[in-house]
View 1: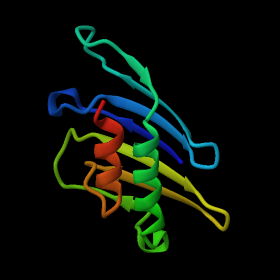
View 2 (view 1 turned 180 degrees about the vertical axis):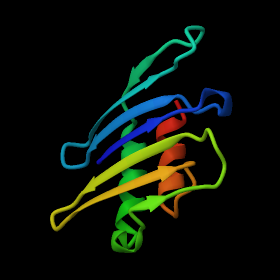
View 3 (view 1 turned 60 degrees about the vertical axis):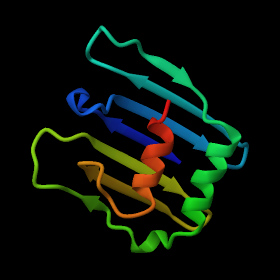
View 4 (view 1 turned 180 degrees about the horizontal axis):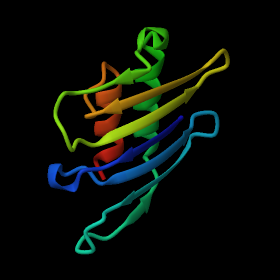
Amino acid sequence: MHLSAFGVESDDFPSIDVIIDFQNDTSSCKKWYYNPTYKDSIYSLSRTDITKVLDLLQSTDLTKLKEEYTVDKTDQPSSKTIIYTNQSTFTINDYGLEADHPLQAIYKIVYQY
């Protein structure tokens, strides 16, 4: 799974780039800010967090997710999430970070650091 998001710092959303490899139980997360007051960070999700994300994805019918979500407000964070399965690749663009379940729960997991 690959999640990248362009953040809106005034709403406490930095930019982030996350890769989760479920087969190898690994992740790589990079978070950065345009405001130099805040430091960039690179971290990995815990094994528990990786399992939570996988459980969320496995309990969801990914074919029912829209390819694009948007809100009517301006200046919102936006993300692109790519989920790779054995059968398909799902690409979801989310302007406003208010997509259907499980994406909001996944955002909370990767942004918690």
